[in-house]
Image (cartoon, rainbow, N blue to C red):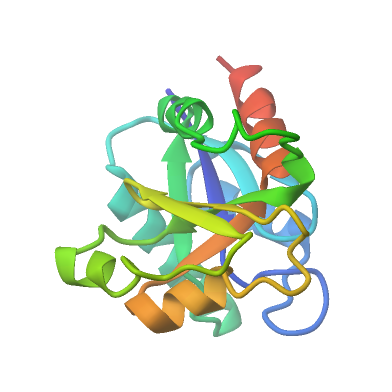
Length: 183
């Protein structure tokens, strides 16, 4: 069995794209996934799968089921435990002076990036905020907080024509810890 963490863009308990987390876990069970466990109210799900279907297929299954059951077009980003460990160890901002995990987030992208998409943000700078793209993740570090930063999900989605969702550093590390307990 393979353990995964999925991040759903725009799913929450109230308002736009509202899904109760208990209903979301039930949806994963209906798809045949093992022991789905939600974490906080924003579409984070830890689950197991037999490994027969690759990640893009798992994401499509979940997206289609959400669309057919709720009518929502919700992108689903999935990473396995090994990938999550790599994301944590690849964080380019851990060695920043006065690093504060509350000022750090990762945007998980739905699809691979092309060179032309990368070029669209190659010269972007909004100091003191910083970002770095590594693989299918955009690491953002905002020393003054996220309240006024331009470097968040909507900026990259609009500029690069990508889909993704952001999670703060504490949520990411907590989800990995919960997923590792299943191994």
